Length: 555
Ligand code: TEU
Ligand code: CA
Image 1 (spheres, rainbow, N blue to C red):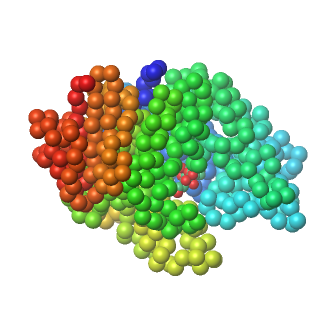
Image 2: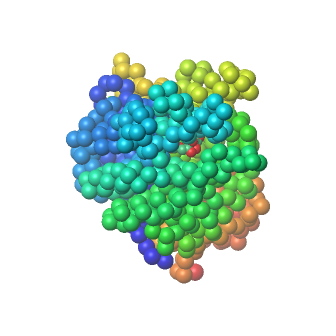
Image 3: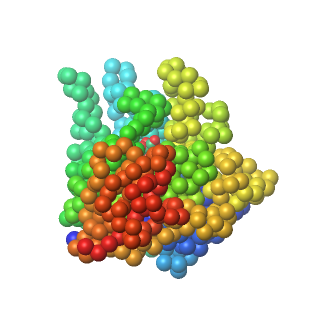
C-alpha cells in the first residue's frame, strides 16, 4: 500500500466561533487560536481543521460565504490568518481550511449580479428555474426546513438552496464557475494552506432532470451524474499540484461511493466523511428530532463494514464528533456521573482511534465536554437548523410538542457542539472575559470540565488522548494494520484485532454500565500488560463499566 503523511496524521477540528475570544465581543477569533497553538500541539495532533473563517453574514455560522478571499470580520484580518498559519507551521502543525463550494451566501457579489437579470454574466453561476404551474419546480426540501426553492421577484424565477434561503446553490455545470472555484483554491494553497475539508461536496452535481417524471420520480441529489467529472477536474487543475490533505463531507454515501471518491487510484479526494454511524439513533421520518435507541451490534456492523470494504482500496476518516453532531460522551457514552463520563470518554476514544483511518478530534472532545442541558427554551438555541426545525415541527406542523422538541435538542442539536470551549472554571470558562456575553451560553459544567483541570490531572481524558496519539505515531500496525471484528454478536463489547505481518493489536471496549466477562483467549494471559487502559489495573476477562484496554503483541 502506498503511504502518505495524511494517513499517519491526527486532525484537531477548531470551530473558531467557540474556541477563544480575545477582543471582548463574545465571539471566538483567530488571535484566540494563536493563543492556544501550544495546547493543540501538546495533544499530539498534526493538522488543525478550521471551520469557515471567510467573510460571511453568518446565517449558517460561516457556511454562507460572501467573499472566499477575505476573512470574516468577527474572526479578525488576513494578517491574523497569516500569523496563525506561520505560527502553526513553526510548530509543525498543518492548517486545513473548510471549502464550501456547493453554495455561497446570497450576499456574495456573484449572487447579487446573478439575481439582477437573466442576461447577467453571473446568471448561470446559480440554479434558476421557472415556476411550474405557478409553484416551486419540485418538492425538494431544504436541510433547514421548508422548500429548497426561493422565488425571486426581480426576474420571476426560483433559485435552489439546499440549505438556508441565504445559501443559494452554485451551478457546477458552468465551466466558468468551476474555474472561478479552482482559481480561488489555488490562491489559498499558494498561501501555504495544507488542505481542504470540502462541505457537502457530493451534492455539487444535481440530477439532470429536476422535474418529476410521469411516475413522480426525481433522481437523488447526492452523488449526482457529474460529481466525479468535477472532482477529477479539480484534482487535475489544482489538488494534484500540492502535497495536501483533502476530505470530502459526503452525506448519503456507502463504501462503494467512498472508493469512487477516495480510492487510492482515483485522483479525486484523499478521504471522505461518511455518515452511516451518525444516523443509527435517528428516526427515519423525523430524523434527529425523534432520537431512537440503537444497538451496539448495529454500530459495530457499520464501522466494521467501512474498515473491511475500504481496506487496501481507499482511506477512512474516523470521527465521533464535529460541529454538526452532539457530544459523543453524551450520545454513545455516559455523562450521568463524573466517573462514568471520564471512563466512557476514554473508552470511546479507544474504540475509534485504533481503527484504520485518519482520526479527527473535535475541540472539547479531548476533555470530555458534554451536551448542554442548560438550554430549556428554543430561544436558548442559535443554530439555524435547530431554530427552523422548531418553527416547522412544533409551531407549524405540530408534529412535536415543545417539550418533545427540547428533549430531542438536548440530545441532538448542533449547538451541543458549539458551546464555548471550557478553558477554566472561572467566568465564561475563560472563553471570554468577565462582563462579555459569549455568543452562545457556556455549559455550566465548566466548573469541573475544563482544560485547566484536565492539564492538572495525570489521569485526565486529555492525557489519555495524548497517549493514544503517541501510540498512533509509534506503531505502524495502528495506522496500516488490517481489521478483524471479534465477538460480532455481543451487545455490550466491541472487540477487534488489527494486524500486519509483524504485530497484532487487540482492542476491547465495554460500551455498557455492566461488569461483564469477555472470554477472549488473549485476556486470560495474566502476563500481558495492556498498551493502554482506562482503569488503574487489569482484571483479565472481567470488564468493568466502560472498561477499555488495548494489547499489542508480536505475531
Ligand atoms: O453539513 C452538511 C450536512 O449534511 C448537514 O445537513 C448535517 O448532515 C446536519 O447538519 C447534521 O445534523 C455541512 C456543514 O457541516 C454544516 O455545518 C452546514 O450547515 C451545511 O453543510 C451547509 O453548509
Ligand atoms: Ca472575538
